[in-house]
Image (cartoon, rainbow, N blue to C red; front, side):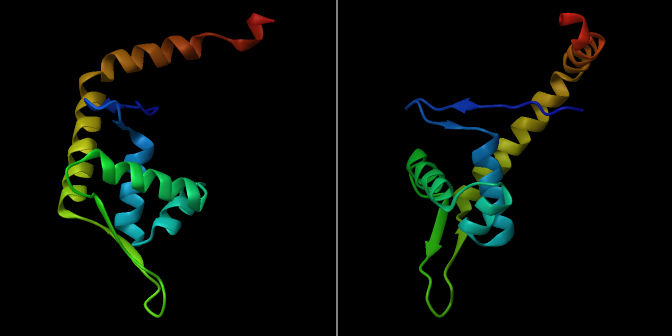
Length: 119
């Protein structure tokens, strides 16, 4: 099935969507902001900008970082970051499940349309 993209807009106008959730997941899996960003085809600067935005969205940071050097630094999700990611993924799953019939019908309708007929 094609992906349903869900964006949750917070009261301050910031949002949590699939890209930020994927970055959180990448950081959790790799322990690195740069590695998570590379995995997504994102520049280091863009990944850091999203991390800063994510950390400003909630009362306390979602991502903790340690500086490089001998230990090469790294990043981890805080308990709040783990919870935010888990809640977002659960919300995604529920949205897909609740809309599965409509999503299927829309995809079937789109597949019936032959782009060559538009010319």
